[in-house]
Length: 74
Image 1 (cartoon, rainbow, N blue to C red):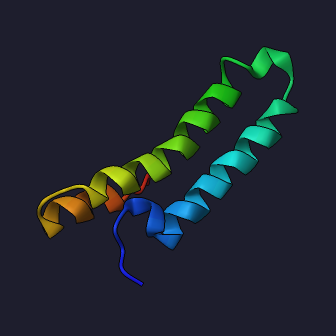
Image 2 (image 1 turned 60 degrees about the horizontal axis):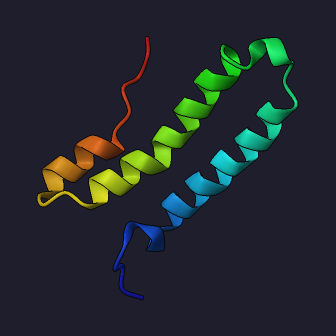
Image 3 (image 1 turned 90 degrees about the vertical axis):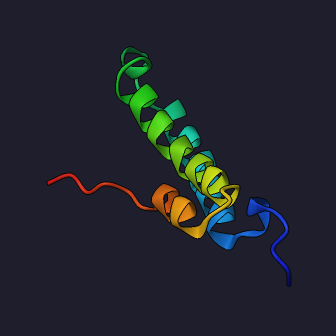
């Protein structure tokens, strides 16, 4: 199967599933967390498929790889 779009990538599809699951779980969080933890978790999870999509659209492989790597907090 040829990869024509980032949407064909299994990793992007799984990232979208994860995002949907996180949104469902955060719906159950207390209202006082809406602009705190809920917002932070949602932004983090949506950045995963967004970075994959942006990396896939890059012209050079080295640029693409930069979008697939995540900094490790120490």
